[in-house]
Length: 291
Length: 269
Image (cartoon, rainbow over all chains, first blue to last red):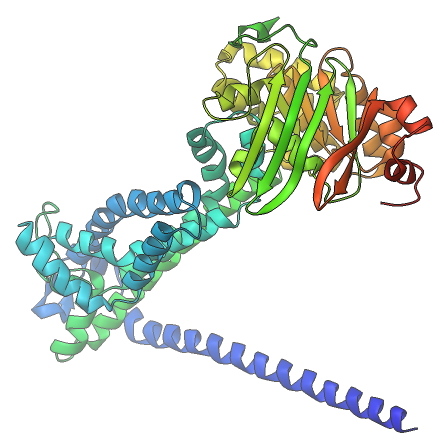
């Protein structure tokens, strides 16, 4: 009899627990979704009235209260190019070396991954200061789009290394012996077998990095600067959209509307990049495993 | 034949490369997985390696094509010779050329996650086969494993979309494409259903006379069906070793070693 009662009690308790955890999980998910919805609704409400074709193409006027963000869009795009060019080979190369050429637990591997993780925890404002003193002054690149891009490279490198590394380590473990047994060199194995297999994961890593770079303000304030002219080359100073938003919101009275509109543009850019990347990654996976 | 353009150094004609293994020991760190193994694998025949799990059969197989090199902390000592070629164990050996002569098929089918064609192209290009000869080699090897009619219209589609049995036959065809003297099979049927397993087994048996085959299997009936010779592995003093070997019929009908008798009769192991 006692055993019956206790089992009934356990069943009831586990049912309550089940309900409780399910409920907490559901509320947490709704709050997360709600936060996103709120941000979006707020931006759309404040920013949408300011959006027009002119906003994308025109110069800004009256310190940003009027006009568009054409130069900022171009500067942001150029900064992204200057960031990606060195970041992809460095990040992917470092991850390849860690996963294929050094043993996981070795001292050198631990030193490099430890360094990468440490780099990831450095606040972005510190990267800004470093970028200003190293790229702008020591290397003499000045306040320029190039300096900003390179500073972002240092900042986002850990994300690229970590995501590529995890893409490499989550590959099917039998690919390497399969390649080895066919007498393939390590280079062929890496370039023709492992890299294509890890490509979807690497693309997702690059997308995360791009999102992080687009959102960055502090590291760019002191490096690419906040000139609002149309940049003529990567050696010009140029204002990123994120820096423009910061400036409008903090320094310009009545700049809130344009700030929201700029933020909406930034968000749309990130969304578009995410969409394209996930479509490409999906297609890549499908070609590897399904058709 | 197109494949003859593959550069091959000191290779005896196909089917004549037996394997002579002397005093082979394999260590993983401090653990001695295999101790003082001696075995002659005869050219052109199918040799089955049987024995309970963990007695070093796979380590033995992997040390023949030096895949043990890929395992951190693994040390192999002793002597391995293919045909009348030189020593292939130890330093200074062209391991990539060795692996071209000594193919391997694994327990789990492991095609590359790319098209069927690329699965052949990558190794063939690596070993210097000219582009225009590749299609011919692919067709010949896929025909050898009875896969050509099933996949000839979908060579540019993913190899991963094939069934398990088809994937394993693809892996055999891929190994055959390099025109090896020896193919090592590491439990090639254990991940397949009985029907697919029977088809794969049939194609392995068909290699007899053309290629030297060493096959690790847990399926004693399979060993009895397809092998000419059999070697029984067992654990002695904590390490794997061969306790009995000889012609399959003889070893199965009249095993000398008591452990081997017990194992082959299904009583233990």
